[in-house]
Length: 211
Ligand code: B12
Image (cartoon, rainbow, N blue to C red):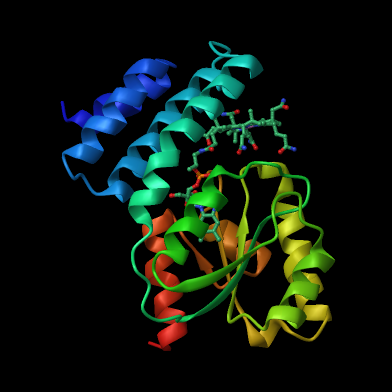
């Protein structure tokens, strides 16, 4: 078993000390920080499944979130490379009625380290706030993060608000988050669905370079 899959399991088991030392070990072994992020994401997947199976409750979810946050702190530093050019701008936020922000923060961090300016609107973002930010910052991209199936409708409404404001053709809308897939992107009227931060970077660069 690789160090990183052990890492996913350690997070799934809420073994705070093991997660900390495995991340430190992986970083000093010069493992790609994005791979480590992916393993932590897999660990959160295990936590989510245990929550669904009533093995974990909200307190465990909160504890897992705390471990995840601490584990990610040194990764952010490793991801910050010398950015030579700014490729473009993305307005990013977690949609209305949703307060999950780890996925959004990771995507924002990885996009920033790849030369894309990130305007982070935070969580539980009103539809109109996306519209206002498009007018103010003139981004080429808008990103919605969504972790709750109950907020698909909010994403759809946010896209509709952007459309109604007459600025839909100025931006590409990218969406991501645990329960999101291509069919959700089609349903809400987004341009692209991104499985993870790596795909987010590839997709953003494709749009910004126009190929
Ligand atoms: C941590 C967590 C929490 C934490 C959030 C802490 C925080 N600051 O974010 C806390 C404890 C606060 C929490 C609260 C709740 N949670 Co919660 N939570 C989770 C958990 C375990 C992990 C989510 C996570 O952080 N994953 C790690 C990140 C890195 O992954 P990610 O978000 O998917 O992001 C990656 C990609 O998706 C993509 N991506 C993400 N966003 C974007 C955006 C763009 C633009 C792009 C391009 C890509 C992209 O890139 C990221 C990096 O690779 C999930 C279970 C799961 N497996 O998802 C449940 C889960 C999402 N929660 C759930 C629920 C039900 C809740 C609560 C309603 C619980 C309650 N009863 O109060 C509340 C929500 C309140 C609200 N209104 O939002 C359910 C949702 C079920 C559903 N069908 O919708 C889940 C699935 C658990 C479960 N299995 O039941 N939660």
